[in-house]
Image (cartoon, rainbow, N blue to C red; front, side, top):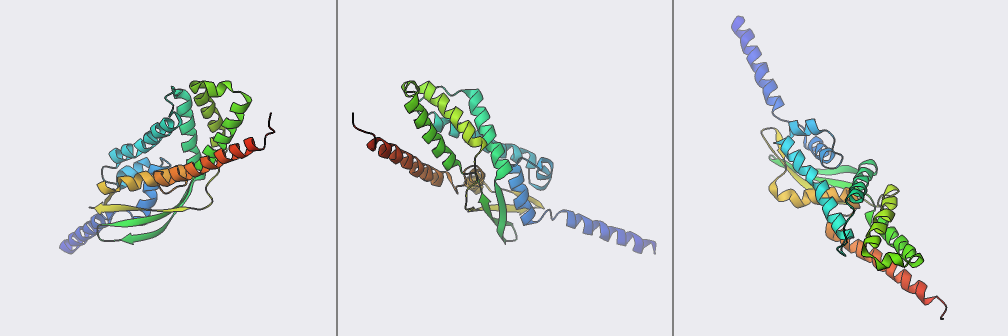
Length: 242
């Protein structure tokens, strides 16, 4: 009887151990990944369920820093000195708006023995429209005060000031974009394969810009700015001749 009791306990222990090693489901892993990447939540849970989770989480945080550097560099193409405090405030506000307004849902999971390919629908911020409105306002202010256009530093500072206001009231894109991410699993722990770095970057940017990747966002931005340029030309054509 005693041997039977001990055997039963061993079997229960083995069963519980094997259950614990399975880890969370692919759907839960996909949601947890976005929570950590974009919303910077569930840090302890991520560290527990993902392989080297604490270190990977820190690497994911670099997406925010990389975005800030590239975004500020784009605004300061003239070489004028970027006001660091304003740059930090602007990007932090934009990231906060994404966390508050951008949404997503997992629409498909293609699971295999070693992992899963997860498809997301992301409805992100309409960054292109915010940039377009900023450009319209900047042109208007420059026409009212030509001194802004004569000084690259003043132009940059005016750009940041206007964009800051636009970001605070930024809207979300009308249509979601679909993105996929491959997560793999080993010994109950999920991890991101090395070949998914671009997919991770695109997923992060989709929340910020509402576009599926940087190239698409740049194309949309070019089209939006061309529209503003056309509006300016059309308005000049309607002015009476001197």
